[in-house]
Length: 159
Image (tube, rainbow, N blue to C red; front, top):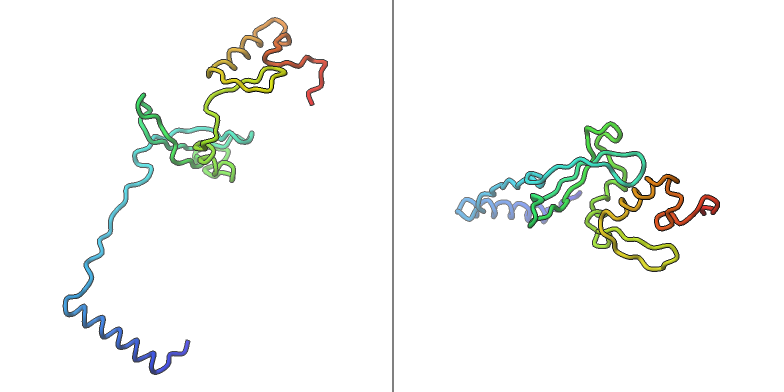
């Protein structure tokens, strides 16, 4: 970069003027550094498995709140588990976006059931599906006579 004589004098004048102002007491105040609190310092760490694929990567989920009745926990950070033998602390793009999935306003918070032949979904209590499946699996015929849970018989194609 070429500096002309006029530009050189301007640079020198600005430098001398600013140093003269600092010597006369017009110096800026000291810049104080402030230490911010670590984001995960007050959180609860929970180990879990990624729900996306069948690989089974380990997750560390950090939540705020003490899980008491008046303050439900909210997940604020998700990262890979460095002690997990499958992923060793790394996550794929789907696992890295898991925080958006968990905190999505469109996420279902309760189970829904659609009866065979119906076009409407109905809201069910939390353990209804487990009870229905368990009741059918404990039948002597192995659950083949459970039209409410599995409406297809063995002779109907699945696709």
